[in-house]
Length: 311
Image (cartoon, rainbow, N blue to C red; front, side, top):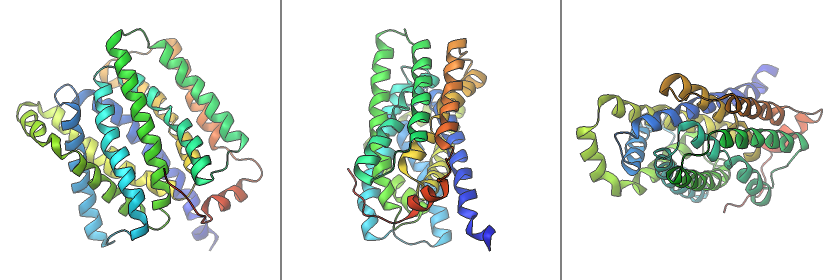
């Protein structure tokens, strides 16, 4: 009986780990596929692949439509996170390397914490704040170590910052929707909303797909099936079982993993300062995810239904 009751406590951290690993790989795949696809076309191709994968699973599981109360959050997260975020991030990654993009986007967890506390009533325990401070220091360290790319990289950084704002708003909008709809429902229809929003890029996608190398197209499909369909679902599953602030802090592990993956797969060799910043990012996540003596109370409070607002 205890094993069954504690099952979500085991599965939720596992879902968060899957999300972090796949999202880290997404920054590398975007960097690679972006050499053949424009930002909007890549976003549409990724979302279309994600909708197809999610739609099949949704149909097999027969989960039906989300309840009416969840649609506001689904629409907002679909437009901001699945649609706008992906286009702007793709654009930004054409001007900065994968590691820098991941680090700049990780301003998002700070915004999530602030918005979550203000709009969702999320608690801000000292360990969470301390961990975020350590991780943010690591992100700044890596960002400084990889700066100096000229005017084009400045535009890339600004685009990634804009993506971070869309990401944070999308997460905070999604959280209330998970109170009445399943993780699969929220992800499937959020992805569909994003794909519909990107339909104006259909002509670009068709033209570029006809000339793109197979590796670029496979990267685009990979982005849709794994970092989108699978990782956004595992994210929603974990988010439904904790606070937006704590989940946001977990993604501080992404930059360190992206630096490592881009080093191994793209040959973008990090310096000593970059690696040190990555270690700080991981250390901050460890601190933010640790629990004081009242951890069980915090878990119960995080699951307790309460009135929530979305931006």
